Image 1 (cartoon, rainbow, N blue to C red):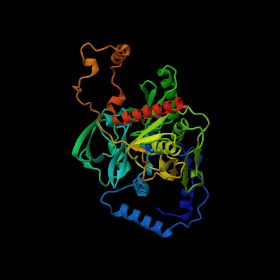
Image 2: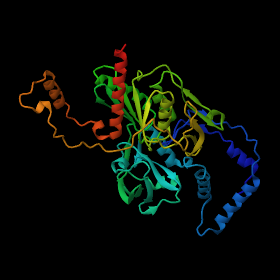
Image 3: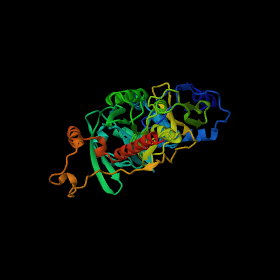
Length: 442
């Protein structure tokens, strides 16, 4: 097949539409168009001749015949797989799956993965997914898929092996720190991801969990605020926990909208890239759905990309106390560039920066207060004798009322099982006590 300068230039200059879509854990720029101005660089004719020669040698000498379409598809995949872990070539099925994942319903295991030194690594399992139910955790290494080693596979190849019809099973061999490799069998399912959950942890203290940044996440967080206020008898909250742990990211615009709910003004995030339209800046508006309620943001090693934008912005503006462990460190922006044959490129086009100019790429967000994951266990009841245990002790009128209230509240709470949430709630209560003390003392 002949290669000519005219033909190659024509292919390179075809107009590509940039969609505001991204894969789970990747960010995307808002809708715009990529510049199609001709490049001033001279086409590398010697390299193109080498490519054509390799193509011809493969077609002639390879043990089995291969058609041109397969060879070109493989060449494109190879170009992108060697750029960075997040750039990839999307065939029609992968492109469709990408669009479904950002809308909130898709098929699979419900897991965000990346490559760590060529080994498949779990970034985070999605809430209420088969992967989460199977006990997969952030930073787990998937060393085998159905007994086939993953070492040397591209990210796209590994993802394709994990895809399948809902109801079918897959066996993953997991390597986890301080534990021998073990197998996990997972049943594929249609993933219906509800990205926002909320509950009232205690009187006046709310909890919002964002598991992924989807198209409607910003709106759903605003609804969560209204529901929490209603559950708190219409009273303003005393404190709020925003849980971004194991949130692999999502749509950049959704992250901006969520952050905007907590800020009255100021820069949220900005990006830098080679294309003119990759230079983006997002700032907060005057509307503040959170009403400046004291805020703790929870992060961990599974918090990546868009969730790091939120945590970084709120930390820079000193709007929240960030608690937990270091985040994943994915500070790059992926833009989906659709092609004219139901295929697309998912290409890293920029890096994002926090308001103070911090690049999170390969570093992550460092929490203000480090709280490791741990289990909560109560000690045995003390055998110490108290005044109330003495025969003939004087009664306290408030004691019976408190005992009645304690009997009513017997339901288990999230803070009773989740150590990091427990610590965040205690911090908010402490801040509230200090605030009340300042207001009452002249």
